[in-house]
Image (tube, rainbow, N blue to C red; front, top):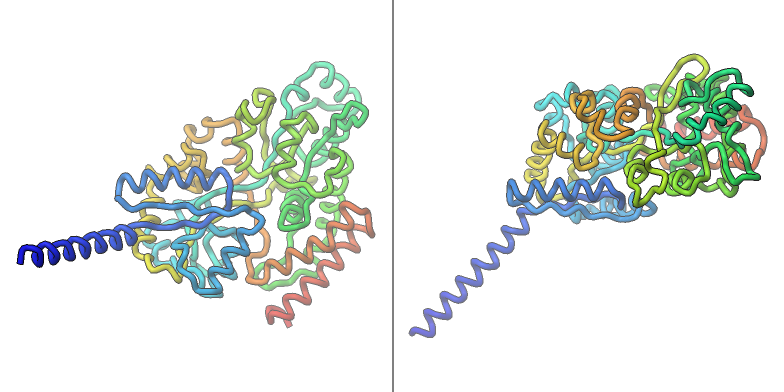
Length: 438
């Protein structure tokens, strides 16, 4: 009898233990993101959440090169491996219309996030279709393209004297694209292994598009009409053609072998004494103020993308929103995490860890703007950003841009007008194929 009771109690204990294990599993969330420093910061923030709530947060990462493929493979299989995903802004169309994202419109309106978050982050990270009032993500990692530069090169008295003698104005942070070009030319000295500028040129994903957009938007150009899908006369307008020519002009002053360059190479341009100025996402600037990763950290400065010839000033948007995956079995728990994430105190912690908050109040605060050498430029940029098409077929549009712009930019094939006329034709055909235009 005693053995029987012991056996029964042991069975109950096993059941309770199993029950506890299952319960513990339920009190956990998996967030999928690309492999980079902000994902590490999010894991640190998640550890804070676990201390407060007991809910374990795991930020699972994969290299950028297969992030999109891995995410959509899981989505298309209706898998529940991920409860939340920090998806690229361009994914909004595919994520929402494909049924992969949970509709967060009620959540968005309940917490008045349209007023809380910086306007551009709401427009590009959360809302789809544009101006619909339908929201599918919470702005998480604000990001945009900015510039780093060698302060010691710019501030050298001999360089300043020589620059003014040649161009007729003072060497300083470029006030417009003309100055950006002049400074790039001035420091282009192949015989000294010094070069003027590092820009995005890689054509395997969105580097070329993001780089070109910095010129396009600041020249007053656009990719098209996002509400009507009209592209002819817009992406190949006179302003767009001038912008592409200006971007190609900058390529003349890059270091050798700069035909397939993205964020890694552009930071190396500063750390390895190659270039006077370098384009990059703000998310990659933390390593440039770290003396362990940048020997020139004390001599590295930052500035926002400069205006074009008519005073327009915009930059290409990076960054991501966080969405609840519709196939997750823990959507209620995921919603609680988002409620915690949007709190003011959490946003301040996120910014302090190194994440780029999208909270307008935090961005505007002196504490944030003075926290790093690049935060002020980031603040200025995040209210002047524009993004690529966020439609479900964005990957096709991106590939077509790469196929048209890269041969002109890098190989010198054709003219800017011929390049953009052809791109307009490609995009118009794509939008017809998907029934967006007749």
